[in-house]
Image (tube, rainbow, N blue to C red; front, side, top):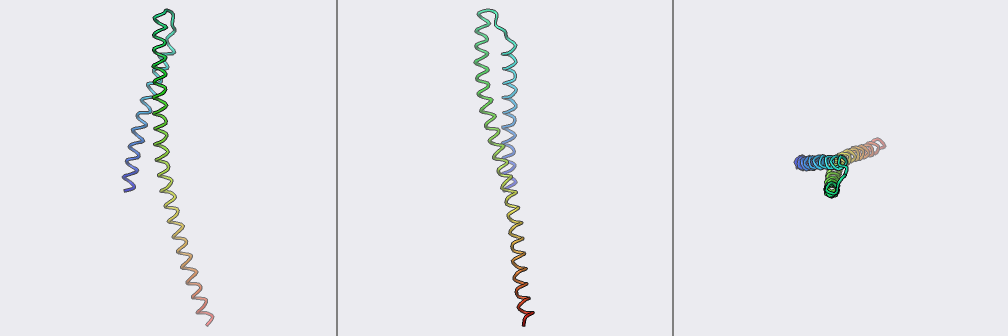
Length: 115
């Protein structure tokens, strides 16, 4: 079950990564087209205003996509932290049981040696 959940989370992260890269490319394109235009006439000024509004919308979409992508990465890393912590906890319990059994055996050995 855990490997399936990790696989699904990995697919979600890949989908968000793809969307992030697409929005990043769109933002780069919008920035390049906006920086390349220098308004000389009144019509060019209207085109510049339209390109600025397109740039602003693209920035907002990029920011939303980047926040979603970072959120998915954080969820994936949080799941990995629990897996590591769980394995470490199992190791600590095994050490505890080993030493608990050793002390009980030593205490019975000491009692038998005294008699």
